[in-house]
Image (cartoon, rainbow, N blue to C red; front, side):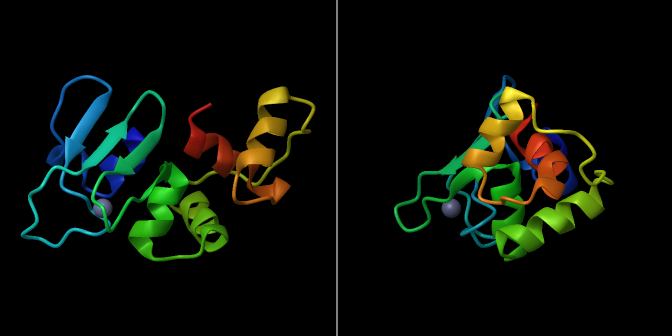
Length: 121
Ligand SMILES: [Zn+2]
């Protein structure tokens, strides 16, 4: 999450020193919007916007998709390319990976590294 926020130039715009950061929402907010409705947790690798009309939330991949206005699968490919994430070469015997595949919006096993990167494990 921190890498993604940093790459998007958002990390400096968020306030807070711990794992919880808050600031203007990069998804629904315009350049003049300074309401700190956006919250990201660097440890849990999740974000959420509390604005009633936005309510965007998810992990780093969801943020990437929302900001680039891409469907989640295309966003995953784009994220993999941007951060030089490899295509999957591991088996899914790992319980965390089984869980990730079940809960992720992207079901392709090829994109397991993206899912891992986005969920922070
Ligand atoms: Zn928002």
